[in-house]
Length: 499
Image (tube, rainbow, N blue to C red; front, side, top):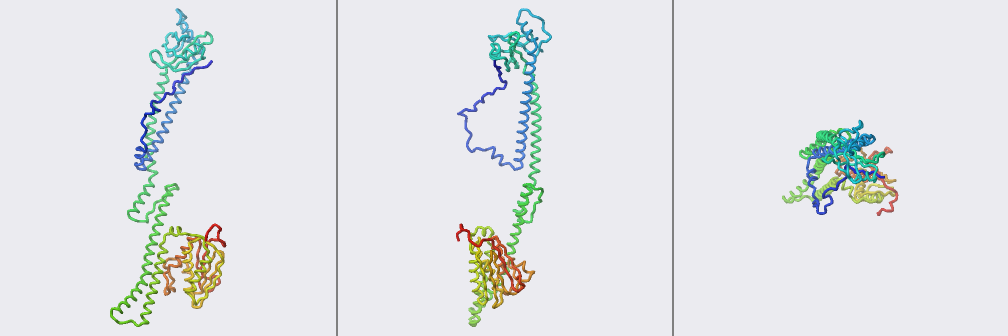
């Protein structure tokens, strides 16, 4: 035999859930999302915190209500089942179905308990003091021995909801239906629902207040950052610094902003210094060029001819000054190139010894009276060929320029270390740290041609190629200066690279 159990919370289909004629949502319509995105970040954060807490509180309240309902119904079912072991309710029901019967037993069920006998045809015999409960198919199944017992929710003839337990008495063979009103459970559940609703409402209000507090507290560093950015954009004041607190993402953002403003301020200072230095360096050749041109123009205007030798000297001076201006402008253009442009240049594997040999040929043309000795071992590096050759030419030009007449220059390349040694006056030890600064020129070299930008270009090129450069006094204690350039590479080219 089986037990028929009619659940009290059987699911019901949702009206219109699968209706094919239901209107489909308009594609691309995201009104609530757009409205949410239009809110300030503080409001969105507070709303999200409130929503999350509301969902959590609602889930907890529903779980509590369902658990309590299950416990109360279980207790109600236990009370109905415990009364079934008493013979009092069976005697009362049986006597009520006879013309005369015994007096009520001391085991009579409480007044809130309804007892009735169920017949095979679905009829019923209501016990004394009980309210008639409508018989259902589950009850007749027990009466016909199709099930041992049945639990279900039912109603009385007056419409009162009851919990029904129907079973067959093993001693008499009678089918007895025992019921109790569900109002006992529903009243407690309704009171619990009101309490949970009140607690959930307070929780949601508290969550909203906490969300606003968290949003204001958490976004205060962001407000400071936004104020600082607006201040910089409005005043171009790059000295603004944001206090860094903690080690979270906001602190990292503040550190990044401070580093960015420091870099921008340094870049602006270097740019201003470059313009000032360039103006100072351009003023001398331009003044000299203007003087020579005015002398030539005055000669033509007055008709007083300049002696041929003096005119030739003036023209030679003009050409030299124009050459110096062109070289200075070229150096300024090279230094004005952004670092990203140098990184984007078409770098490839090149033979450093071949570039050094080409630079040596140009250096011999500039100093034909000098002895330039070279020992170049093969070495391949990754760099921009034209920029690297210009850097080596600048280093050799300095060696030629500062070498005495009939002097010697030694150039050695061994395993990526290029050494250029001259025998000139040398550079004082206290001036060596300044040789790579823009427009810096030693007092002893101010009478010589040059802009003071050559070594700056060399240092920049070598550093972007991943190398190092150093100027020092020769280790043998002799006169002159030794330039050391180290570049990473290999004595043989990689097979995959195309020269």
